[in-house]
Picture 1 (cartoon, one colour):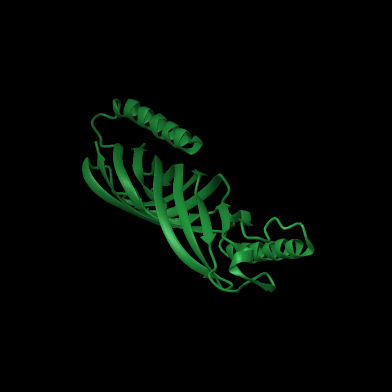
Picture 2: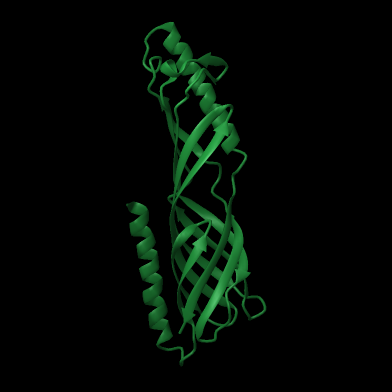
Length: 229
């Protein structure tokens, strides 16, 4: 729940500040409220444009995704939960709608994986039976506070409805694989056979981590609609 509190706090603080500033903006459409959707999830966004060249936004994104994948011959079922909130500074170099943006994001994204082999399966460097393996489960997460950079189009200062789009990257580092365990007969076996299995399961975790290490940057592609008033 921490990420929800922090995202809500960022959203509320920016909205209050924007509303206060809007009162002295002589009717210009500098405050915007909208919704965005994309690789960060779906969520609200509030913004304030100080002038033609500088603005600030706060947004959040939430989404659940199911995804099946294979790694080293093991079929995994995965579920990812996207949940993040950020504050972004926008620079409009030409004074129009094109913008360059940078900011910081609280990143609560996480995923869980599950695999239940139905036949003899290689774990690490050895082959084990489904009974010996049982069900493999694991969890993955990322760094909580990360920078982001994007470029896109956010529209001008004119009041009314407008659309926006941005693309860039979230520099979250590699996904970290945690709690990679199983519940088969060898999972807690105190004999040499159990020790061997747990060693091989550790190797399997490292293989999965090596795969995750190849993707230290998460792509951002968001589209949205907003009303400026």
